[in-house]
Length: 186
Image (tube, rainbow, N blue to C red; front, top):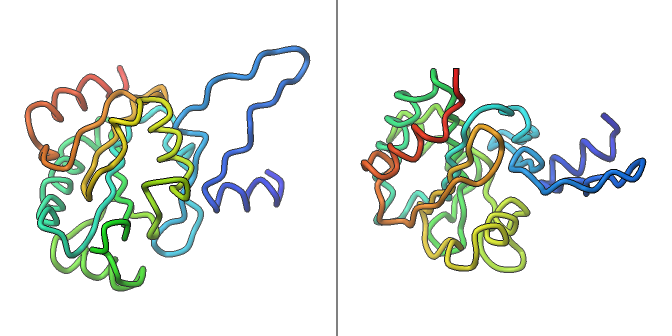
């Protein structure tokens, strides 16, 4: 992998599909995007190719912050079957003012979180992380995060399966059913 590609991935920027040898470009998949991990390392979604992803924008000082407990439970229940829960701290709604260290400590101490956490990212508007801009373009403006703990579910092929608004708990029957449908087939 070239240095330029690694740097673009670390910034969350996917390289556009190539039009090589007359082949048409393929539609983007979730695996084409990358975040930066809360510890500063690159966090390419391609590392989880073949797994389902539940990508959730999180915040430490929100009325929905207790959803961390359910997210951890979902992670524990399904990770052995091919689900990755990815928390994406965001301050879009002014409820995640802390540093990466503050956020990581809060999650570990208060909720025993051990699923992957990205570094803080923007999830709304034109400055949103490329994954979020792609998800909204794929699913429509109604799928855009309106608050913290908005959930996007990606199936094992890297395609967006569905989304759930903030109020839908991560361990609700609707989310559980969608996760089961999105998991890799044995």
